[in-house]
Length: 290
Image 1 (cartoon, rainbow, N blue to C red):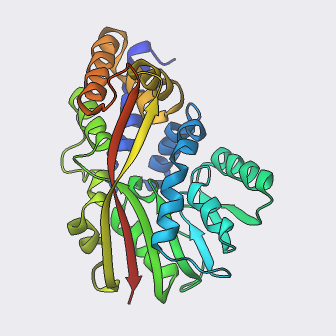
Image 2 (cartoon, one colour):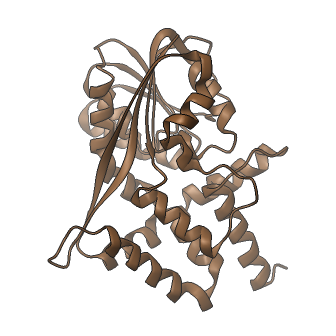
């Protein structure tokens, strides 16, 4: 029987492998832990607020009606819906089936024709050069094997096609959020942070000679909540990584973690009326594949 301390240790490990994953021999076991973390709470509550990012990314890609588009690690479908609204033929994928169901419900409500399929971003079940455009918003950046995931994005994209990404940057609010949590639960030595996907240098390392052109633009998504405490309560309830972080630190440190998270919000907060208006920097990426 698992003791309370053993349960805390397992929860802590699952959190670190979700936010600071690294390639390991048993990727299947790691992915199961990640799926459990991203399935915790209800990420769709958070994801839906990010819809504008999918819309602006599709505009940056200059999508054309009839193009075949793949959304990788699509969550509940922000970029998926944005592309479908532009009359593209969209395949929406994620390895969390419950999130795909939420995306399917959204598409159905709008009368959008989208194909939803469970798929692993590191092992996409599609032939080479199957898509005109491959997308991912705040998704593929969390894959355990970053190089493998980048190779898969490039593999299924046609020559001359586009890869569009939106990735949180290291100095932005979400980048700092993960750094803060890392002070409570240090990541394994030598692990590359997911937020490195939000740097041009790392993107050039990942995609290398497959890049014909690379265009990046730093943008902000603004988190808007009733108050800093409202944001914390929402993320603690619905955002799997934060939920798991609180479980991992244990009751003795929950109060300190909560206080530090509120201070982080206050550091970035532009509101002066008690509300929360926090810009979080991300990198909008458009790669034209060679």
